[in-house]
Image (cartoon, rainbow, N blue to C red; front, side, top):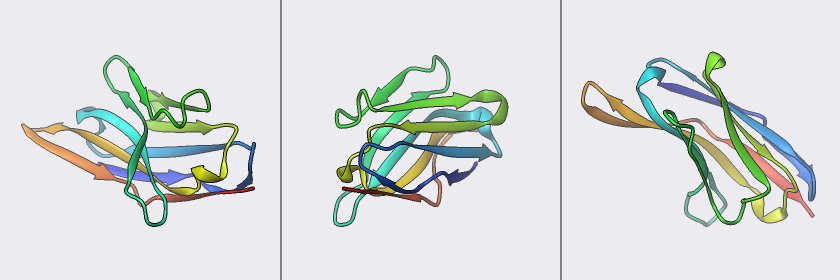
Length: 119
Protein backbone atom coordinates (compact mmCIF):
# COMPACT_ATOMS: atom_id res chain seq x y z
CA UNK A 1 0.00 0.00 0.00
CA UNK A 2 1.33 3.41 -0.98
CA UNK A 3 -0.01 6.63 0.54
CA UNK A 4 0.49 10.10 -0.90
CA UNK A 5 -0.69 13.16 1.02
CA UNK A 6 -1.40 16.61 -0.31
CA UNK A 7 -3.14 19.79 0.74
CA UNK A 8 -0.98 21.17 3.52
CA UNK A 9 0.12 24.78 3.68
CA UNK A 10 0.12 28.04 5.60
CA UNK A 11 -3.17 29.46 6.82
CA UNK A 12 -4.24 32.09 9.33
CA UNK A 13 -6.01 31.15 12.51
CA UNK A 14 -9.69 30.59 11.86
CA UNK A 15 -9.03 29.43 8.32
CA UNK A 16 -9.56 26.06 6.66
CA UNK A 17 -7.55 23.45 4.82
CA UNK A 18 -8.38 20.10 3.30
CA UNK A 19 -5.83 17.32 3.30
CA UNK A 20 -6.00 14.41 0.87
CA UNK A 21 -4.46 10.95 1.05
CA UNK A 22 -4.45 8.87 -2.10
CA UNK A 23 -3.96 5.15 -1.52
CA UNK A 24 -2.75 2.66 -4.10
CA UNK A 25 -1.74 -0.97 -4.11
CA UNK A 26 -3.54 -3.58 -1.99
CA UNK A 27 -6.17 -1.15 -0.75
CA UNK A 28 -8.74 -3.94 -0.38
CA UNK A 29 -6.81 -5.20 2.65
CA UNK A 30 -7.00 -1.91 4.56
CA UNK A 31 -9.10 -2.05 7.75
CA UNK A 32 -8.56 1.45 9.07
CA UNK A 33 -7.23 4.70 7.69
CA UNK A 34 -6.42 7.71 9.74
CA UNK A 35 -4.64 11.01 10.12
CA UNK A 36 -1.93 11.60 12.69
CA UNK A 37 0.12 14.69 13.40
CA UNK A 38 3.43 15.48 14.99
CA UNK A 39 4.44 18.90 16.22
CA UNK A 40 8.08 19.79 16.94
CA UNK A 41 9.23 18.22 20.18
CA UNK A 42 6.02 16.25 20.61
CA UNK A 43 4.95 12.69 20.00
CA UNK A 44 2.89 11.73 17.01
CA UNK A 45 -0.78 11.71 17.92
CA UNK A 46 -3.99 10.46 16.38
CA UNK A 47 -6.15 13.18 14.87
CA UNK A 48 -8.94 11.17 13.25
CA UNK A 49 -9.53 7.66 11.96
CA UNK A 50 -12.15 5.84 9.93
CA UNK A 51 -12.91 2.13 9.72
CA UNK A 52 -13.11 0.78 6.20
CA UNK A 53 -16.06 -1.51 6.82
CA UNK A 54 -18.74 0.51 8.59
CA UNK A 55 -17.17 3.93 8.22
CA UNK A 56 -17.07 4.45 11.98
CA UNK A 57 -14.98 7.49 12.90
CA UNK A 58 -12.87 8.47 15.86
CA UNK A 59 -11.52 11.95 16.64
CA UNK A 60 -9.09 13.44 19.09
CA UNK A 61 -10.88 15.63 21.61
CA UNK A 62 -8.86 18.63 20.50
CA UNK A 63 -10.31 18.55 16.97
CA UNK A 64 -13.89 17.40 17.55
CA UNK A 65 -16.33 19.77 15.94
CA UNK A 66 -13.63 21.35 13.77
CA UNK A 67 -12.17 18.50 11.70
CA UNK A 68 -14.01 15.95 9.57
CA UNK A 69 -12.56 12.77 8.12
CA UNK A 70 -14.14 11.34 4.99
CA UNK A 71 -13.37 9.05 2.08
CA UNK A 72 -14.11 8.54 -1.58
CA UNK A 73 -13.96 4.81 -2.19
CA UNK A 74 -14.09 5.20 -5.96
CA UNK A 75 -10.90 7.28 -5.84
CA UNK A 76 -9.26 5.36 -2.97
CA UNK A 77 -8.78 8.71 -1.31
CA UNK A 78 -9.25 9.87 2.26
CA UNK A 79 -9.74 13.48 3.27
CA UNK A 80 -9.39 15.60 6.37
CA UNK A 81 -11.38 18.81 6.30
CA UNK A 82 -9.95 21.17 8.88
CA UNK A 83 -11.98 24.22 9.87
CA UNK A 84 -11.43 26.93 12.44
CA UNK A 85 -7.74 26.11 12.55
CA UNK A 86 -5.71 27.16 15.57
CA UNK A 87 -1.98 27.78 15.95
CA UNK A 88 -1.77 24.64 18.08
CA UNK A 89 -2.86 22.63 15.03
CA UNK A 90 0.52 23.39 13.46
CA UNK A 91 2.26 20.08 12.76
CA UNK A 92 3.26 17.62 10.10
CA UNK A 93 0.19 15.58 9.25
CA UNK A 94 0.60 11.94 8.26
CA UNK A 95 -1.79 9.57 6.55
CA UNK A 96 -1.89 6.05 7.97
CA UNK A 97 -3.32 2.76 6.72
CA UNK A 98 -3.59 -0.45 8.73
CA UNK A 99 -4.85 -3.86 7.80
CA UNK A 100 -4.05 -7.49 7.31
CA UNK A 101 -2.81 -9.11 4.13
CA UNK A 102 -2.34 -12.89 3.87
CA UNK A 103 -2.64 -13.07 7.64
CA UNK A 104 0.14 -10.54 8.23
CA UNK A 105 -0.74 -7.17 9.76
CA UNK A 106 0.63 -4.05 8.12
CA UNK A 107 0.92 -0.40 9.07
CA UNK A 108 1.83 2.11 6.38
CA UNK A 109 2.56 5.83 6.55
CA UNK A 110 2.57 8.62 4.02
CA UNK A 111 5.43 11.05 3.69
CA UNK A 112 3.67 13.78 5.67
CA UNK A 113 2.43 17.24 4.79
CA UNK A 114 3.15 20.40 6.74
CA UNK A 115 0.28 22.43 8.16
CA UNK A 116 1.19 25.81 9.64
CA UNK A 117 -1.40 28.02 11.31
CA UNK A 118 -0.37 31.61 12.03
CA UNK A 119 -1.92 33.66 14.81
